[in-house]
Image (cartoon, rainbow, N blue to C red):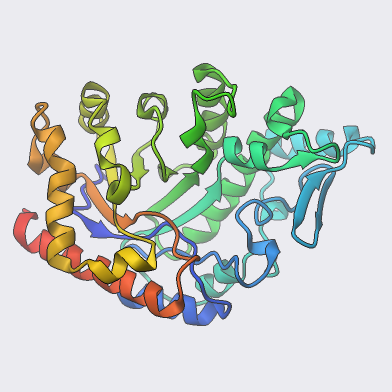
Amino acid sequence: MAKFKPNLLPTAIGSMPHTDPREACSLITKYLPTIPVWPQLPNRSFQENMYAQFSEGFPGVIVEGDQIYINRSQNLDQQLEQLYTDYLENKLDQYAPSPDYAAGLDAFLSLGIEPFAVKGQVTGPISWGLTVTDQEHRAVLYDETIADATAKHLRLKAAQQERALSAISPNTIIFIDEPYMASFGSAFLSLSREQVIELLEEVFKGINGLKGIHCCGNTDWSVLLDTSVDILSLDAYNHARSISLYPSEVKSFLERGGSIAWGIVPNEEGALTEESVASLKDRLEEAIAPLTRKGIHFKQLTEQGLITPSCGLASLSKEAATQALELLAELSARMRKRYAS
């Protein structure tokens, strides 16, 4: 893909409230025809929870009921050796999620659509490694061997997904979803900046197209901007001010061709009832303004920007999710009419 200038086209984070994958896909392709995203359906089963969803094939993984953990009581050496062999030989076929784990992806790939670009997503190694524990309830992120294996496993998952999505469009976007990066710098996440970047870059190296990171809270954005990321996705509805604290890093990111995905449509039903296209347009312009006051051109921010919901939509009712996507599409159309060159 040439230098990415989406001019505030809409796309989404991924999760939807539906249990019928066809219904979710129909809604997405209706409102996001240019950059559709395959739907994650965590309400369908725990296997589609964002942590369980990408766990298939990981050494020692156990998914039982609504729990996922690594059984370290068994000898994992052979399974780890196989993972590293697959990694070195870039064997992707066995890293495709089964329909039970990603019914939305399975349905999406069978739609027969040919959009300009297509978006997918995997759970990031930081968030996966903090959520998934061993049988003693210790986060596997703090086991050096398992943490490294996690990043390599997710790299293979991302690469396989990108290959599958490229059959729909040659322009692929794969986001790494990292909600737990909101805890960076706290006692809850005791990793160094260098460790975080190393784990993220391991996953990024498996992605040939555009690489994104989504974090739906405040974080040290300079850490994420110090990676090779192409698209930085944030909850601009609730946390827009946080990105303006890093103007030099944002400027450098944009100058190398990076894009910001402004998550300006709320994913809370109460907030949705209070918003309109006009109010969200004002809110988005207010979110962008602090960066323009720090020397970044408004035109550059809009040219190299996407519009998304603030986070996934799975917690909403189906009616509210439809409303969110409708607002998103209409807001994008209005902003593009006003600002797109």
